[in-house]
Length: 256
Image 1: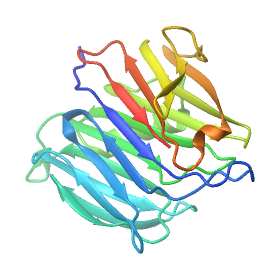
Image 2 (image 1 turned 180 degrees about the vertical axis):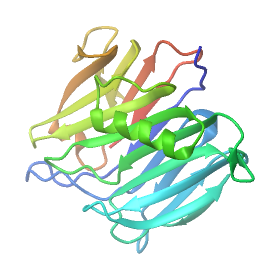
Image 3 (image 1 turned 90 degrees about the horizontal axis):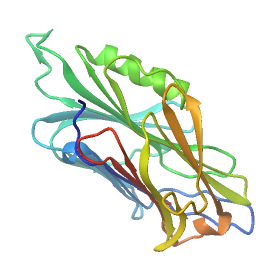
């Protein structure tokens, strides 16, 4: 059985005036923490954003930043905990968190645990905000990356490659009137809730504002619709989910 520790994902962003049909802004604080304690934190104090990676000493990682056109604007390799400045123009980040001892003398020494995490650095009107966390057990990083990319591109309902596990796949979109939150996993959800400033606006257990669909290949997608005012500046929208099929619960929390 696949074993993992709880995952907590937190992405905090500032939304501009909703009434004027704009819903965008740079991330002022962000946090993504996964199994084993690895995670990424962002702060946006003037005049420059900063980042910090928290990881156990035996975990290595590559943190990359991309602009809105998909061009890489910064790349950082590290081990354990490190920090630095967010490059100018960055709108999306990707982190590959992996075992440090995956190779010996350039030759793979056995199956390694690769984690691929992606998220944009802003929530923009008319675009889908997608945060994913995909784990792959593979002999090489290239093979693991290809498997993770196939799931990312295929989306909910895609057939999972061997030794590939989705720990978070969350889409958020808005047309200026509503905010649609969709969380998908190739597992059954035990719990799923959304709160705004601590007030429950969606709850799977009670059936409040949660619709379940099955896109295929064992995936389940839970959809909730929130008013655009939920993303007003200063509000905190938190999505918490608990999936079955793991020795320990997988919990994802997303804030905007």
